[in-house]
Amino acid sequence: MQDDIFYIVGNWKSHKTLEEAVIWWQDFTTLWKKQPIATDKVKIVLCPAILHLTTLSSLISLNQIPLDLGAQDISAYPQGAYTGQTSAEVLKDLVAYSLIGHSERRKYCKEESDELEKKAAMCKASGIEPIFCVQEPDAKVPNTCSIAAYEPVWAIGTGTPETPENANQVAGAFLKTHPHIKKVLYGGSVTDKNVADYRAQTHIGGVLPGGASLSAQTFHSLIYHATNP
Ligand code: PGA
Image (cartoon, rainbow, N blue to C red; front, top):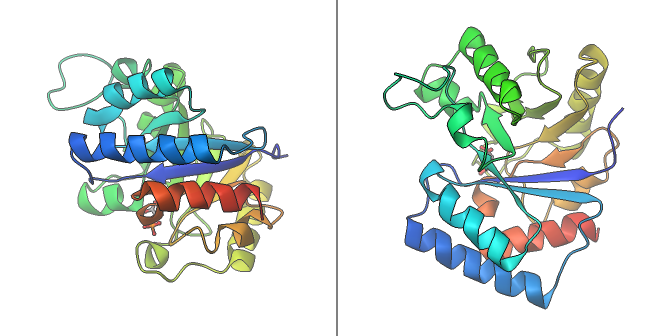
């Protein structure tokens, strides 16, 4: 059974310099203070570039905005001699969540099931909640993961989202076939204009917007419309 907290997980991908990230934060904070959003039924997560996590973490504490940070990926290896990798142990004090298996990582970094399972296990061992991204309705989600995100590749960054009804059907099937999954998010061209339609579905427990998280105004508006349908 899913709880009724609706997740909104913004994925900045490889966008934004540190200066742009700070400006985004200032804009978002201004909007939030003007129009605070009741967060008892919503969980807001932002996944910036790893480099910006420390700065954003300090700003979140300073401004007291109820937003969690997430990583976009995590190493399949433990802390140690793995040059260029960022382990879950290194990230655990900065992030509460990590995306695992986003389609862009599968495509450009050739990540496959074995490695993704290790990444999810590393997250769990360090107290980070993995958000396991799948692209097909019949994909398998490792037993260690209780949050999945259904993101059909053709809907990502195209402006053509999966219909809320179809996404809901897929989410329902995931919940049925994977009893360890407690929440299924939908990602792929989610905006402030369509988020309420996903929120209205019974099996969809949140959304994973990419492009719509890049502007503080649009992200704030998306959160607002998800909470005030
Ligand atoms: P999009 O990206 O919202 O820009 O389609 C979603 C994602 O890739 O997570």
